[in-house]
Length: 114
Length: 108
Image (cartoon, rainbow over all chains, first blue to last red; front, side):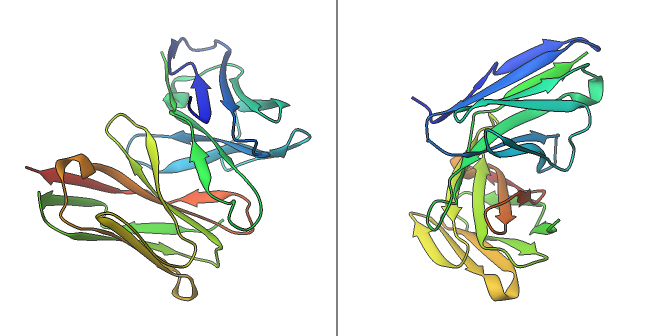
């Protein structure tokens, strides 16, 4: 089984709809991240969480919210989706301390907002 | 945040050729990773290499942290090497910053 899973893998929605993307991990890591990738660009950080009670905004948090339901689960919500939020969304985790800083990514969710 | 520049932005190779991809970063880092994004969008970890040199088969990477750059070497390229290669850096185990990637096309 994959260490970092994302659901759904693909989603088409309409402008104004609320949508939630979910991420689960079995690596036992405290740190989790949400990124978006636009065509031809690198990944940009939306939100990150260092533990269940610690959530921080990234570079592009406007229009998004997150929930860290448990150490293993980190959800991203678009309260009212708009077309320019069409992108590929990735969840990632990493551990802490020497030798445990490698970041691991989920398979991505391709979101289209019409 | 830390600025990350990757070069070249695009690279076309004939199968069997060698290549070097470069990643420059603007500040001190203690975390650096190279990823390969395949045509299906999946991000594959290649190297975790905040300093030094590592090799894995036909791929190797070198990071010179004091001079703020990292190099990814691909030898004897294959068509399956095609995709986008990303460098990501971070400091003190916090946020990671990605470059815009190098898009590699290996032709048979």
